[in-house]
Image (tube, rainbow, N blue to C red; front, side, top):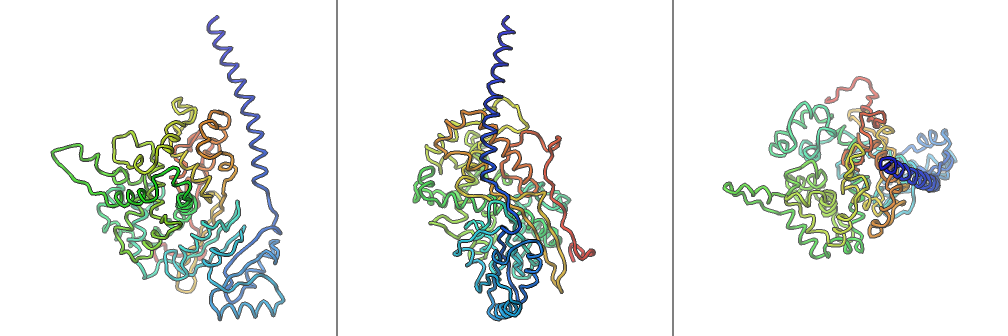
Length: 492
């Protein structure tokens, strides 16, 4: 009788959950439909760089149903602008042709576009045309719609920088999942790449096109999904003051973390607990260690250091990468290592993160055990408006234009507001998370987002898989870069 009663109780619980989940699911689907509305071609707004002959691009856009009224063409050079203007007048074609710099346009002109075609005609790291600044303004100012396409075209690396060092700072912090195949053939563990950085940099220089190819595929998605959202969120003073140290103390603490000196006492085995955890587990803090390596390897006036020093309401990009990366590793606070996490967040945020867990944290029902980083990333999503690229919808090409190899990428971005707007702000999470059905919807969204984004950026929503990627659900695969010339040597 006892087993029958237990079985009846279990059945009743399942029935209750079934009823609750399906009602919540139906409600969420209505929310999703209201958030994600389809558009036809005539509704799409497009921006591209004009050049002297804007009619070539216009002809293609109009062929596929884009209206002239929804087209912007930007040109910074006076002579080229005059040529473009004359050709439009002669053809009687009326679009919005703007003379000015693209980064300034994105910073100050309050428009959202469904498609942006950014033909930089320079490497992605370059002072010519400021590609990093353009990308920063696109994502920080939210110049693309909730579901949008960014098409980029960057030249091969030039002579302006030591590209072995530039790319080495990025790939030395990455595990095997995001590095080119030639890096796996090298067989160096992450900490060895940093320990022997000059050797690693030289190796990259010998396989430059392969690393540059991979960098474009992975840097821009991480930039849009994590780097800028961290910076945007932590620049919000009212939010930062509520959850972190006060401004003056926070900057003082960050400076101390960046300059933390490890005193090695060979007679005391506990010296390892004085080493910052991000130095012990480099690939667990990829963006933080990327910033740290740039600071170490390049002079203060280097373009990358100037980029990291850019501020939004006194918070630099480097500050945000340190704070955001540390908060994502909140799980390590009880590990005994030097994490600094509880030293930068106040009791309010610590309490929120410590008190809230997903209902199945200790049940082992899913492939991954849901960790605290998922809560932190939800916070960045609510306030930072990430753009998350779909690996399976991405396209990468290369071709030779005269003497220069060009690398083109098409990224399809989703702001995923059907997830982030579904949740309240953090101090309401404790009551919100009591609803298991709502938790299930959140977990399902994170699983699907990670599954489609993983091949581009493996650190977003880590530990969120419900089913493994080797199961029937799989993951979105990133296609190899297609050579339009058909015979280009990868390292030519």
